[in-house]
Length: 293
Ligand SMILES: N[C@@H](CCC(=O)N[C@@H](CS)C(=O)NCC(=O)O)C(=O)O
Image (cartoon, rainbow, N blue to C red):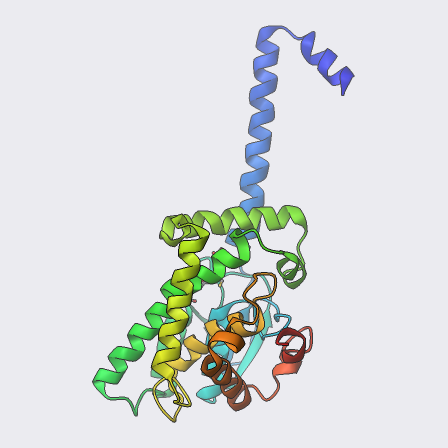
C-alpha cells in the first residue's frame, strides 16, 4: 500500500489526474457491468421447448413456499387452477421487460404475470371469474391492485430495506453479502421511485397492517376471496399472502397472520391444500412446518 502511495506521490499533476480519472472509470464500468449482468439478464438463447406447453420461466424454488416471488406463486397457482399443463424452467433469465416471472408458448414470449394470464385465458378459453357479477369483478380487480401495487412494496421494504435479520435472503437467493448489498440498493431505489419507500418504517408498517386488515375484513368467513369458489384474483392474493405467512422470517412479523389475522392464515392453508398438494416438494426446506410455528 505504501509503495503504491509513494508511486502516486512521485507522479506529476497530469499523471495524477489521469490516474484518478482512469481509476474512477474502471470502478464505474465494473459496477455498471455487474448491475447489467445481475439485473438486466443475459441474451436469450432460443431453445427447443415442447409445443403447446406453457414454458414457465421463474427463479428457483423458495425455502418454505414455491417461490420467493409472489408473482410466480400467483402465476403457477393460476396454471394449476386453470388446469393448464406447463413446464417449469428455473433460472435467472429475465423477460424482455427485465422481470420475473414470464412464459413462452410455442416460441412466443409473454412478460408480466397478469398479461400471461390474459394471454392464456384467450388462448385456452379459460375464465376463472365467470361466476362473478360485473360489480364483483370490479371489487376483485381493486383487491388485486391493492395487493400487487401496495402490499407488495411492503414485502420489498421488509425484506430488503428495514434493518431485519437478512439470513433468509442470503440463504434463499444463495447470495453473498456484496450481492445482498447490491440488491438492497436496487430495491431501495425502486421503492423510493414508487413512493412507498419514502415513508418511515413505522408509517409503512401501519399501512401494511391496514392492507392485511382490509383483506381479513373482506374475506371474513368466506372460503375464498369472492365466495365459496376460488377465482382468478385468489391467485394474486394468495401469491402475496404466501410470502407473509410462510416466508417472512427475520422481519419481526413472521407470525402476523397466525396471531392477528387467523382467517388469512386459514385462507393460505386452504389455497395450499386445494392447489398445491405437492407444496413441500416445491420448496427447498420442506415447506410449511419449519416456517409457521
Ligand atoms: N407486474 C409484474 C411484476 C413482476 C415483478 O415485479 N417481479 C419482481 C420479482 S417479485 C422482479 O422481477 N424484480 C426484478 C427487478 O426488479 O429487478 C408481474 O405481474 O409479473
